[in-house]
Image 1 (cartoon, rainbow, N blue to C red):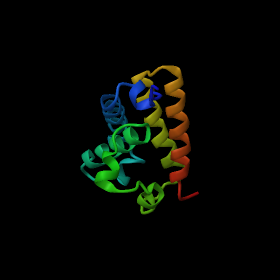
Image 2 (image 1 turned 90 degrees about the horizontal axis):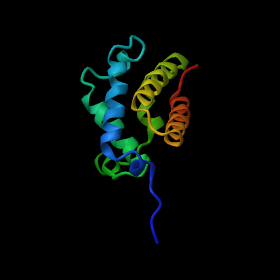
Image 3 (image 1 turned 120 degrees about the vertical axis):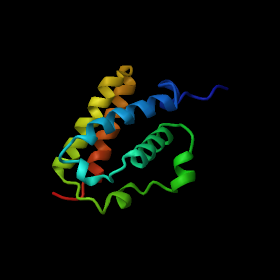
Image 4 (image 1 turned 30 degrees about the horizontal axis):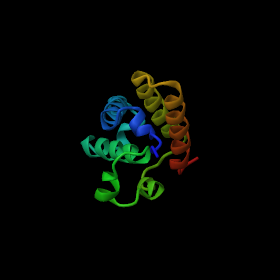
Length: 125
């Protein structure tokens, strides 16, 4: 019996997520709305998001091992995330996905997840 391939496997594993999140943070680094929400050094945030997404999509559980349960809303609660922050986050994530140009079923799955997650992190009106 063959195990069903995960999205992580379909995109080629960790290198896909490393590149996707590097592209995302290139946008964040110069975004006047989002940049103030992040620490000066973006490397830890880059690593955390890469590992979280890789794990979420079926990759290794390094994120859980290093950081425990994601508790995404709790971890983002200290940051004012309103509609403009959500929209800018989605803008950069969509641009990163577009640049990676995954096959359509993968693209659709990623974008649907990112839209749901971005709205779920919103904690201001």
